[in-house]
Length: 102
Image (cartoon, rainbow, N blue to C red; front, side):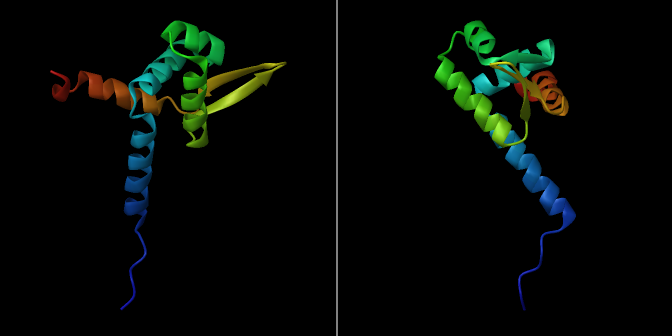
C-alpha cells in the first residue's frame, strides 16, 4: 500500500506553517507593522526607523519576499517593499489581542 497524497487541507496547513515560520522574528514583525502603516517603504527608511543594520534588514526583506509575503516596486534606483496581502498583518494583530499575550 503506497503513501497517500496530501489532502487540500494538509496543503493549506503546510502553507500556514510556512508563512508563520517566515514571519516568526521580532524584526520581521516590526517590518510588517511598518509596511501595514506606510503601504510601501525602501530599505533605508526601514533600517533607520528600526535602528538596525541595513544588511540585516535587507536579509529579512529578501527572505520575506522569497516566501511570498512581500513584493517590490522599482522606481529608478530605489526598491520599495510592500505587503502582498494584509492578512499577515491581521494575523499578527489577532495574536497581539489574544489571551496568550496577557
